[in-house]
Length: 468
Image 1: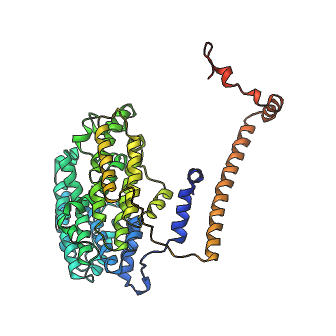
Image 2: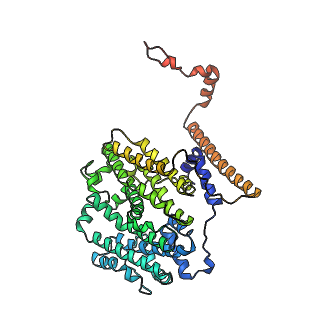
Image 3: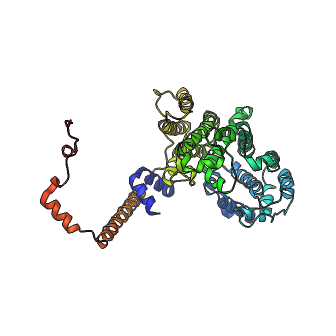
């Protein structure tokens, strides 16, 4: 743990406690048994860990009917995205691969070695035959859903990859922005919903309300797009719609210029406003989930997203570096998804943070206030304030020995933080002494004059004014 993190958790003990509670005492609802898995399936889960540790942990806690299918769904789309993202692949090679990727899932032994050496998930495609081998083993109805979404997403990606105007100028209108996010994330929500319904883990009404599953994907994708401004700018890409940023600056890159700080903050608040219009749909969708592990799988990314929006809202650091919520806060969020009421409380907490950070000088001040109020009103309609909150699901009872061990762990962490701060303070004092600081004279002055050494408010008051 870095020194800055130790200092942070010294002032945020609840986050420290959440980290210990999650890492030491968390019991998964469902757990894989690697001893019963084929080598190809084990390798698939290894790739899942490599591509996304956060998603991997949540996916592997899904119920047995969905765990493998959702894992393979994720890897298939990650493989597709790795091809679409790689600017070193010629469009003549890339376009047919994207459009026919669903057919590749039937080609036993297919691999792809054409990614650039710096592409993060290159190895997944080099060994993609293990994904294809395991894909053939999942239920046929799951295969149909995954192939259909892969076909739609691949063709959508190909349309954008072959769009010269998009490559040069990025996304133009908010409508284009929504369509792009639909292809790369909204379709994922559609596919997952179909898998949840076919396994009877979600209400069938969610299939009739495809706008809800689309919002689940768009809320996550838009949050990532806003947060990743600097990273995308360095990669010479831009996903913020011109319709929004052109109101505030002349060029997209001007948002990163510190001279345009106020305009950039107004722009990012408008981007966050656009994301918030999906928040009610997200909560409505979660109400339709019937199984706990599926609920956790859906809710965890969404609470992370609303916390991230609260962090990046009017945050100038977004234009200079990648901003993320602290690990301790993330662990708090992982523990806050036991039921819909708890998720709503979390949304309300961060909505109020956004509302508090809202600036009256912002051109969108009233619209942002209205958007925040709308989400709170939805929550109020579902869970009126005078209604007692349901208790969170009771966790496993700890034995006296386990409780003693938990207390010991907390004491050791607290002692480590205190000791580190003590050592740092000592080093700073020693450095000052080496540089010539005369602490002996300072101590003598304090001993001689006491508190009178320091001027009082009265001494500092301007002449002609009475001290109150």
